[in-house]
Length: 373
Ligand SMILES: Cc1ncc(COP(=O)(O)O)c(C=O)c1O
Image (cartoon, rainbow, N blue to C red; front, top):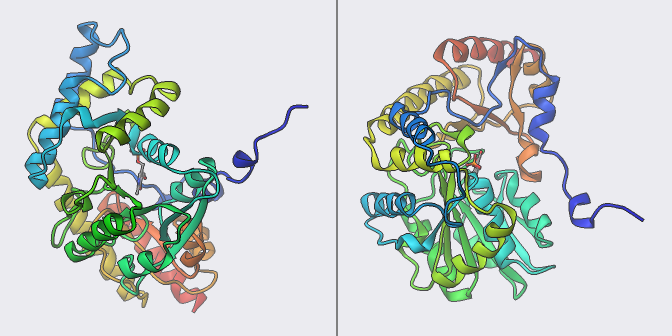
């Protein structure tokens, strides 16, 4: 008899989609997690030239082209002074596939995976698809994840914990001290730290540091992507970095489910990573201006919100019925519970949209807030 696997029955379509579907056509969408800028021209041109030159007619190496992996390695040297061997990176179909590889390769049925709650929707679902047991970790008042809370939750059944900084849905950035602690915990407890760094370059205050810089074992695997940094969500190009033995195991999964990342996207990514980086600074500056504008608008509405230091999200505490009231006024936001049980009483707003739209959205938000108070 045909049926469905229990692991696929254990996950459902992301709650974010339901919100989009409930919104009218003219709605202002503050629900979407993608930059509204065009992909930098040099990245687009590289893909077009590769296609015209027939360089995209074949599979690349399973790990991705050597040139792309060299560009990834160079970027880690440039940003973190980290020496990464191009052999220790796999180009993936976005950060999403990289997370999938990390969990598939390291989690046995029943083993626990710890992750922030509220946190990115994929951590729970991908853990379940890997037959693992999700173990959400509540956040501090400032919406960062406390290393002490992660350490306290580790048992002999823990396979991995996920760190995400800057974070979706909160915009929170973990301090360097926290990142050092996460590395120590991974080392001392012999548990894998999966560091999701897809927003690594979108930081307004301080700087993003990676636990990989501080670990003394190979117990940190880094996931990142071109998606947010270079406004390339549609290209589906990310990567995972890890030690030889970890990469070899993740490659087994990648080889059979993906073969290789899209070749045109690999050429675009190589150009994005190795070309001029001004576009990243320009986009980040624009996001920072929008963040300040949104924070001011939310404060005027009387909403309480910790200042997010990165990514392009803000997560205010909201009164009951707020999300529906805002949606009714034509603004899409995502209810906090879509990101985990601890997200209840919050909402996520993405400010990766134009200032004009943000201005109109904030007017509706102020009216909606007054209506539910
Ligand atoms: C924290 C986080 N990790 C990973 C991803 C997946 O990124 P990609 O679009 O590269 O698959 C996202 C996308 O929204 C994200 O917010």
